[in-house]
Amino acid sequence: MSGEDEVDDYMSDSFVVEDVRPGLPMTYAKKRIHDLKKTQSKVPKLSELESSTREEGLNKALDSSNKGFAMLAKMGFKPGSALGKTPSGGGLKEPIGISLKSSRKGLGTEAHLAQKKASTQKAVLEDFQARVRTQSKTRYVEADLRKSQKAAFDLDFQNDVRDPLESWFWPPKPEEDLLEESEDDEEESKDEAEDKEPLDPGEMLDTLTAYLRTKYHYCIWCGDKFKDDDEMKEHCPGDSRDLHDEDDF
Image 1 (cartoon, rainbow, N blue to C red):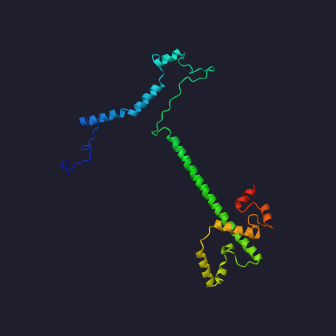
Image 2: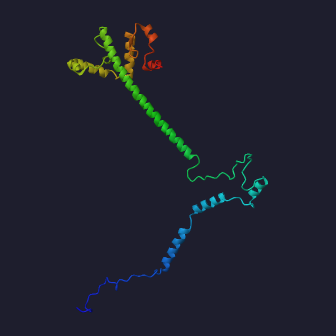
Image 3: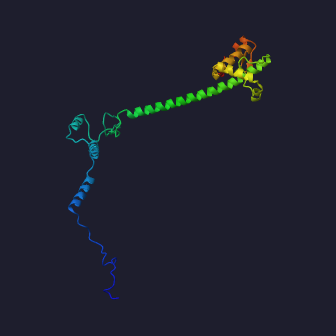
């Protein structure tokens, strides 16, 4: 095949020629946009100008032609000397710098927010402590109630009392004993329970300890059975756990 019949290679250097010119000419519109962007990048923001001017003014020493400087000179001030009357020579030679507030919050806002946060934290802590005290008191009441029921059961039996004054004066019966009760007794117990409003554990404890103290001169917190009222009044701090805790100190 001759050279004229050969298929040209369009990817060869004869067709793909790199443009190695130093730069392509811009259109007027593109050049204008380019120049504007270049100029805008050099122009500082108004806030930056204000800050720069302010700092420059604050850091610039007073000129001798300034009226304020002239007044200071009349009062004996000399450039580079300390400010104020300082016999020891340790006075300030430069004014105290001005610290500008950059935050947009009003004066006193941060202090108010800090006080509000501290107040909230205090309220949360007090609420937590109150709940802990309530839970602790509930556990003590329940434990003291069980102790009182057992004491009432033992003392009643020792004194030939075979039925409690109130059903809850004695510890709850085991499950096997409940199964032995007749259906009539169960119905009667249910009717009595429906007629009476359920008592709060604290009320139950107060009632039962009063029963033990009055009838048997027994105090669950002392753990003692006294001879009579006089002996109980003399040796027992009182009819509550708190009174006995205070007596321990």
